Amino acid sequence: MNRFSSSTKPLTLSRSGAVAIATVVGAAATAAWVEARARRAERDNPPAGDFIDIDGVDLHYVERGEGPPVVLIHGNTVTHADFIASGLMDRLARNHRVIAFDRPGFGHSSRPRDRLWTPSAQADLLRAALERLGIERPVVVGHSMGTMVAVAMALRHAQNVRSLVLVGGYFYPSFRVDALLTAPVALPVVGDVMRYTVTAISGRLMLRKMAQSMFVPRELPDNFFPTLSREMMLRPVQLRANAEDAAFMVPAANTLSKRYGELVLPVTLIAGEDDVVVDPQAHSVRLHDELPQSELFLVPGVGHMAHYAALDRVVNAVDSPLHAAALDHFTSMTEDDLTLAAEPEMGRR
Image (cartoon, rainbow, N blue to C red):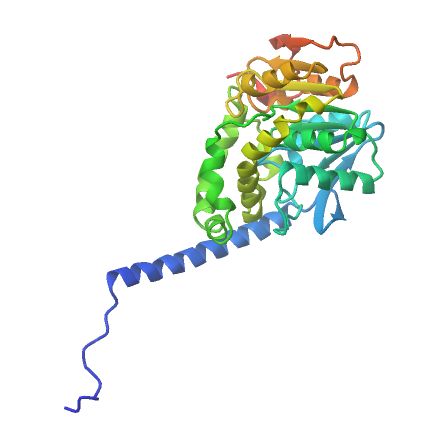
């Protein structure tokens, strides 16, 4: 037989090669499924408000009511709709012009990759948006990660902020397991692959448990996922925003905490005594001790989402920030102080 003649021996694929091909095909199929779910989520949950283009960012915001302005800044995982689910936006809109933003990468706001979206960068973006909207010296309400953005806004644009209401805030650098676990998702390329494959799947398995941990020791409200949309929270762009914000938390807290002494405006701190996400003693109580013009309310039997259970307290802090309070005022709330009638699903376990 001619040595150049074709061999009759069949070609075989090694086991490792077969696994590699199956992995690539599976990843591609998963990515396509994730993308389809994300597009469907956006179609099923269209923007509830308006957009404003600020420095290349399509910033989505919802506005309600008339009167003195109030700005609401949400935390990680959620969107502006968190303030709708809690009832805070509607309550404030009775007497105020209320603006709730989707922070960059959350909800329907874009998150360009041409800059680092630190709390300070987000504060500058929101301040520019407020100027464009003609809003002067609002009361700024922040929750969780949103408190860092609110504080950065007050430090960088002090003349444009009337007072701060900070709920469940993170203020000082400390070890964060969430930042460690999500750090790879924030990386270019590797993170992009993860957000469309591994993280997309694990996020769906863990989201409900994570949401429950934010409300512990109370139950997860029945209207939480229907209002915020589970699938909107799991889109790759929002997973990236979550991961990047978590990665920025510790260094940003380290930088901001060196300037807290510059805060001279009224500050109201509200935190759940049983918060398992952010330790209220290490953050809210400590910041209250550092700020003589602050007021602190610790809410018993309540976790990280204190604005759901202590709705009246947040509204009162917006309406009357420290005007009649002693500068060293501290209150540990009782169960009778909580407004629960409007949220029957928030009853104690």
